[in-house]
Image (tube, rainbow, N blue to C red):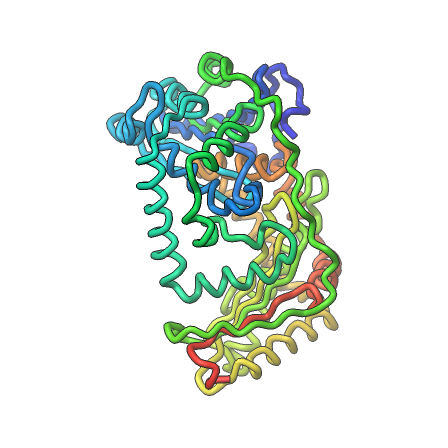
Amino acid sequence: MLRQLAVALSLVAIPAALQAQEVTTFTLDNGMDVVVIEDHRAPAVTHMVWYRTGSADEPPGASGVAHFLEHLLFKATDTLDAGEFSATVAANGGNDNAFTSYDYTAYFQRLAADRLPLMMQMESDRMNNLRLTEDDIVTERQVILEERSSRTDTNPNAIAREQLRAALYMNHRYGTPIIGWRHEMETLDMADVLSFYDLYYSPNNAILVVAGDVDPQEVRRLAEEHYGPIPTEPHLPSRYRPAEPPQLAERRMIYEDERVSQPYLTRAYLAPERDPGAQETAAALTYLAEILGGSSFTSLLGRALTFDSQTALFTGASYDGMNLDTGSFSLTVLPAEGVTLEEAEAAMDQVLTDFLANGVDPAQFERIRTQLRASEIFARDDVAGLANRYGAALASGLSVEDVQAWPDILQSVTPEDVRAAAEAVLDRRQSVTMYVVPSREML
């Protein structure tokens, strides 16, 4: 954790893969961690505050409160009227927004570098001085309920993903949707919001990331001026979450919804997350996702099911490892006309069986290694992307050193590492397979 780094301002050495920027870290006396990413090519800055709290940290029965609070932070403070924060950013030629995930909530602004003092002034204000009314609660609660209606309840694929995740995580809060379950969202009140805000929106639970045309010493001076006076939260709890028990039985589901336009199947497995100082398995799973389903033209599932046998119209694989706790590895197959879901699943499983028996194709492996290296190099040119990369990693339990080591760890992966990771993860006992259909009559 950053908190374990020296409090004194110190430049962090950067490996060759990420030498386009200087990264400086320090910690304020109140426990707030700060990361400064220098990039002087344009007079612009990204200012972000990440809180180490997300939907997985919510108390039982209050699902959605983290996202609800994110909305409410754009209401009034001691010095700003409701809506004035974003209006001020826009008036200064910038843009701002926020987002909530399972492990963090983040707020950001992008604008001219000379407006950084104003951003710190306003962001630090709403960290400690939010002023809500009952009208705010009622109005914004309706907004998030309508958001759930438009993004989830009216989207059969979104509902299917929600149901799949709820089955995959039998004990962990990762199985609860970030936006919340509707019946719990409807009961969120002022007390729920303020207790969450007072406990978690504290400097010792926050990471400030400033990226762009900035001087680290000046950032430190501004951070000490604006964030430094905010008191530490003495009762901040440790980030304990219920762990997943050993999963011993494969789960299978059918989601039936007449709005489904094209039947498909998806399977999700529990998978290791990126851990501090131990990212090698996550790196191998990054390769595995590309090998199995990264490209419709060159991946194993794409070639075998889409081109060779014409079993599928689409195949894909993905790995979700940027988590504080256990992640997931997913496969998807959309069968071609005339192919049943059972036939498509059997074809998918045959590809997995063949891969585990034969191992990694060396040519495909080297091609993916080159692509990942290129992706890491291109990432150096996206200052806002770098701010997101560092913020998400640190809020998920990783360190600056882990972020900087990641490109080299990716390059050190071997075909044997990928095969070993696949054998460990592709275990049907720790998986959920879902058929998504408009009607069971199609089965």
